[in-house]
Amino acid sequence: MSLIKSASLLAALALTTSATPALAALKAGDKAPDFKLQTATDGKVSAFSLKDHLKKGPVVVYFYPKAFTGTCSLEARTFADNMPKFKAMNVTVLGVSTDTIQKVTEFSTADCQGKFPVAADTDAKVAKAYDTKMAAVNMAARVSYLITPDHKVAAVHEAGDGVSHPMKMLEAAQKLKK
Image (cartoon, rainbow, N blue to C red; front, side, top):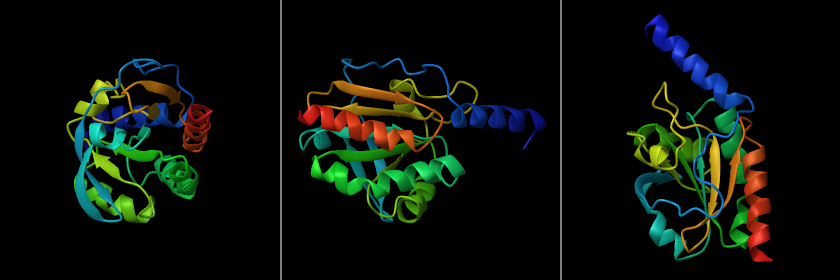
């Protein structure tokens, strides 16, 4: 890897681990772009359609930069630990990164503990549609969205830490139930 490419990657990763200013173009009330991606849950590969899952209830779509990195692993484990609370509110959780399907398949069993699907957005089309793609590298920034069955963004959370995302999405989902 060239020195310039390494520096770009390090700079991008630094952005994902510290508090960052608002990056997401989508705001609460905006229509969420529909998508279909290849996913893995507990090591099993399948397809995920946002449109189909929204028929069942709200969906949390959380973007993370890279599987098996410290903050991304912590975030996935925190979502996994809180899955009973999401399921009790009929909320689907989906993690999205630009990693390969092979990488997210491994990640789905290790850090996601088989409790929710993670998607391979290798060409970053979905990250671009949600305005979470980092400019310098083919990675998604750490941004979470709660999307309602009518395809509306109910909540957005942007922060470099991984632990606040599951908590903020749980809070937002609880507000939907009221």
